Image (cartoon, rainbow, N blue to C red; front, top):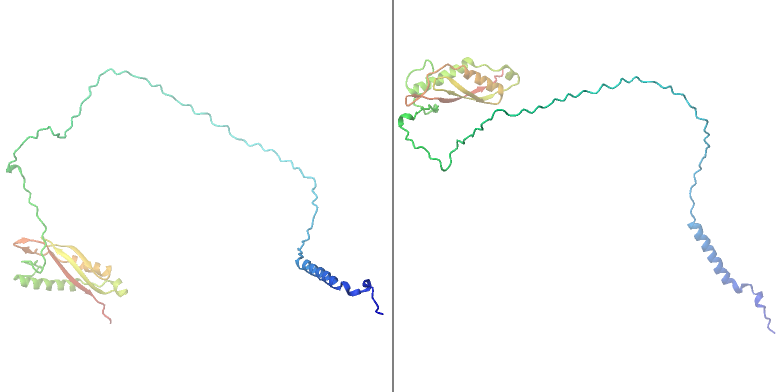
Length: 241
């Protein structure tokens, strides 16, 4: 005879159900534990402010002596008196001096005697190389070729006599060649002196030397005194001792 157990006495009959329920409860608790957030709380100290009775100070009242305002200015009004015109003034008509289309121009013949001819002398400049008669340096004589040679010789002697090296240029070691341009006008005087060089000190000295040139006999072109431009180089060179 087979023994039969009571189904209620079987302990493992609902084990799978209990396992599933327990597993879900554990997952729920784990989720809640991970998602739980906490915040830092700062301690706040609350003090009670006790106000005492406010002290009332008596502020003395000072009187400021303010001067009274100045009296208002009196406005003087002038009475305007209308005077009637006694004399009648005649209006003058100003006639225009401009000519119109209807005006007739007086015809007049001008004779030659009434025309004044003024001769204007032109300042003619002829280069030193092509002039018919070169300017004559004091003490030079002879033909035009001899006058040219004498002019250049006298010019070199003049440079050697009046040459003076500027002291400032020596200290600054300034040297070089200066080209001097000037004009011997139709009166034989030296004018329009200009220079071009490496420094203003040397240019000023070169112009000073040319300004000391004597008055010459002016150059002539077709037996007429004309201006003659001339240029000469001056070499400023320091000698090492």
